[in-house]
Length: 461
Image (cartoon, rainbow, N blue to C red; front, side):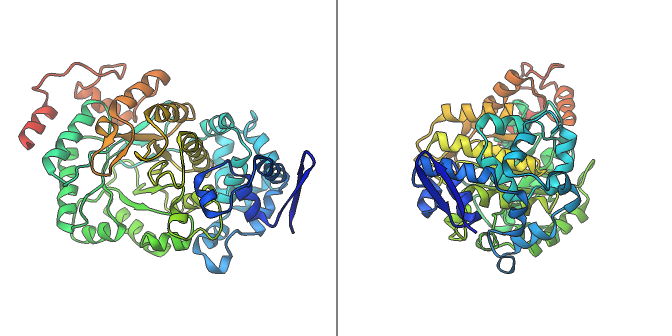
């Protein structure tokens, strides 16, 4: 059944829910590249008006990708919590927006609602919200996870310490780790993107992380962001694997392009939990996503990139992750052209992830050929902090010398903590004070070259 809407004197017709969602999306390069974007501002407004009147139930009964063809669709529909959905079952998309912005939508209410929110519901309501709406609603959502520390508590923001090196040099990586720790970063995870896919090299990186964390009794977790099959094999060989990483997408075909299936993710999830390396929790998975991955893999099925992104969150949600983040500007200007599109996408992803019950953070980033700069990233970082983002990246100098893109620095984390009064994970905050890296107020203390962490770096070099 088509949808009809009129703006001024012009009438528009949208063939189905898939087209309606695509045409209601704020302008972005990826949807234009796919040929599914609204042709004009008028058509975009008309689609939003029609979408606001769409009953939420239709998003359950009319899947965008057929049930028989896609295991992500099957996961979404088979795991949907009808009891949790009951309080909003009679609502339209527009009524859900009004509810989310109302005082009735408290943190506890939204936590109870999360199992009822499908990716399509999250994406739909997102499309008719302003940036300030996305910030306000996401800020009310609270998602807490644990492994060796507690992430996501109110008034906190964690940082992934990202010490990448173009040749996986252990001394260079160690120097970056110590640099980040001395700036109070690393409570989310110390996570290395390896330049190599060699099992011995990745094993050495895992042992390096384990040595630093164990030697200094740091209440955090390490991760080498290798493919799940690599992590699985290294676990079998006895390597010290804390978190298992994987990039995931919102369709079965996208995930197959990444070399994963839901059954493989279940296998590695069970293997990591069996190691019981967490001291206060058992959230062992770390997922990364990003708008445009399904389109770049030719696996989007005509679904707009923001909705595909929300569908990736359903995959992540199935495995109770410790961390999920959108690498929002990493894929390039073909999908998010400029700073305006990157900022909007970051707020969308954070809102949808939080609404669906995920501990979502954001790699506030851009590639050097995008029409964006560090001022745009400052803006997005600030807006995400206002929205209660779970964690962000800490990259030396904000310039990842291995991946070749621009992100956020250790100094950026200090800025946003200072402006918003945000603390670190409490166990990590206490460790920083014991190590005299920070004082009682969480501010950095003056350091001497004799500090044990600095001395460790000199020894490693």
